[in-house]
Structures are given as C-alpha cells and as structure tokens.
Image 1 (cartoon, helix red, strand yellow):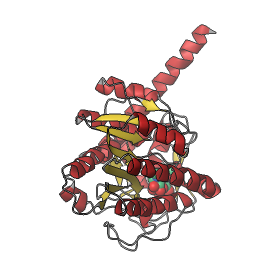
Image 2 (cartoon, protein in one colour; image 1 turned 90 degrees about the horizontal axis):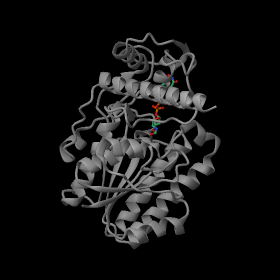
Image 3 (spheres, protein in one colour; image 1 turned 30 degrees about the horizontal axis):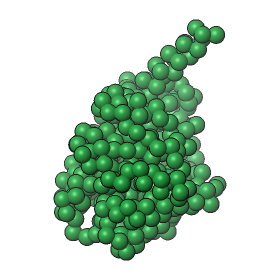
Length: 351
Ligand code: WQD
C-alpha cells in the first residue's frame, strides 16, 4: 500500500482524512505533537477502520526530530500537511508564535520531502487567503487580498512557500483552500475537539445546545446580507477529507496539468449564521439560546466558493447537506457528553 505521511493527523480534519485514506487503500502514518490535539481520535479511527494508525509525537518545528521520522519511513509516497495553529484571534495576540510554528513546521517538512524525494505534497490552505472578496462566489483566480490576521498570512505565505518549493524540486503539489469545515463522521467516533471555549460557530452552537455555553452570541445582524448575519460556505468535514484522497490520486495518476495546483473546497452555497442556527434547531429539535451581539472584529461579511474546478478536475462532489452537517455535529456533541458523564461517573465510583 502507498504510505502517506499525515502531519496533524490527530486533529479534526487530519483524523477524518486518515479514515478516508484507509478506506481508499492507503497506509497513513501520523506525525502530531498533540499540542492542539489528543490521541483520542486515533482510537476512533481504529474503531471505524480497524486500523491502528501510528502517530509520531514530534514537533515539526524541530528539524532533527522531523528528519528522524522520514529516516524511519523512507517509503513515504505522499505528504498531507495539516499541522498548524488555526485560531484567528490567538494569531492576532501572538503573531510570532504563529509564524514560527506554522512556517517552520512547513519548511522542515518540505526540506525532508525534498531530501527523501517524496513525490506528492498536499497543503491545507484556507479561504481566508481571499480576505474580504470584492465579488462572490470566489474562484481560484479571485484576487488574494491582504491577510486579515497573522493566521491568514501564514496560509498565504505557506501557499507561496509550497509553490516555490515545488518549482525547485521534482515533487508535485496541490493547495486545498477549505471554506468552513463543520460536522463529524456519521459514526460519531471522531469529530471536532475545540480547546477551551470554541471560536467557531458550529461547535459553539452544539455546546450551547448541551448547556456547556449558557448563551450563544451572534456576532452582528446588521450586515448587508439577506438576514443581516454573516454568510459562509459550510462544508462537511468528510467531504473535505475525501477531497484530499482525490487530490492524491490526481497526482499519482499524473492527471495534474501543472506541478502545483490549487482548488476551492466549498459547497458553493452561502449560508448565514441565523440560517445555520435554524438548521441546527430543526435537526436537533432544540430551541437554541442565543442573542444578537456586536460584530466580531476581523469578520468578513460574506464568502462562498465557486467549486467547479474541484468538481471537474478532482471529480469532487460534496454530498453532505447543511442538515446533515448539523445532525452529525450534534450527534458528536452528545457522544462527548456521554463520554464525559461516564468518565465522571467512573471517577465518582473510584473516589
Ligand atoms: C463563522 C461565522 C462569525 C462564533 C475561521 C477561519 C477559517 C477557518 C474557520 C481554520 C462568522 C459567526 C461564530 C460565534 C458567531 N479556520 N459566529 N458566534 O471566522 O468564518 O473562519 O474559522 O480552518 O480559516 O477564518 O469561522 O466559525 O469562527 O465564524 O456569530 O460564537 O459565525 O461571526 O460570521 P470563520 P467561524
């Protein structure tokens, strides 16, 4: 089987991609220092696929430790690079930590890819590179606006670094620009594990619905959109995961037109915050406790994808609906609640 190195494999999108890779005959290996993730998702991956995926607990910002992993796995046929910090607000407070972690990690992995002649490289990018677009939907040729945060800047710089590294080497690469990944694997055995209070909308919704958060704040309903709240392109994490497998297959079958290609991963449907909340209420039958609050600095009004290139070239066809995104996110949140209750109960019995 083709061994694929998945950096950040214990993370939300990494874990879902590992499941999809296994289901498509690949042999993934994870490298993740678990600074922002836990190995608990590896247990979920094993339950879903029957495969115990190995994780190297290594800081990719450390070149020697990263190099050692490649020395132990000289048969790597492809790399999918997820490992990065991704909290927009935190990146504004600690820009140097973001540049150091996100860029040093990427550069070390690319240096090893070159040295060990790994032929295929897939980079986890984001719609955030478009900034606040002048026209929507955005295509891959839409202008790259000045980054709205250091996090966004690391994605823009990361894309440039991958392009330049591709040009000066023999490997081929694909940049995947995710819109808003949400939801969880239908089994509810893997999902999103936000650290602390969730910044992102969907985990904030589900944690409010279970009472972990008292009341959700909608950051503004006075925008120039159909209902005043911001519009985003929510896309199921399993659809995002499968796009990585398709991108890898495109490169392995030499079907890429250029050495480095870029694709939007969005459904093409713009959904407002209030519409997302109402979709959640419909599928969960929970009346969500929310209020309208002030705008969040840095938020853009609206963005959603023109995904025709990914559909045509990757043969990608996102299949999950907004309702299924909300239903799987809810099922995962309830599973987390059950696990927490069981854990507390076991602790109680033992004390
Ligand atoms: C979506 C909408 C908020 C929380 C960011 C990054 C992107 C990617 C996903 C990493 C906005 C509103 C949110 C809440 C709210 N990051 N909201 N109340 O900001 O579009 O994208 O996260 O992969 O690169 O830029 O996602 O989920 O934070 O916000 O009203 O409690 O929900 O204002 O309009 P965002 P988000």
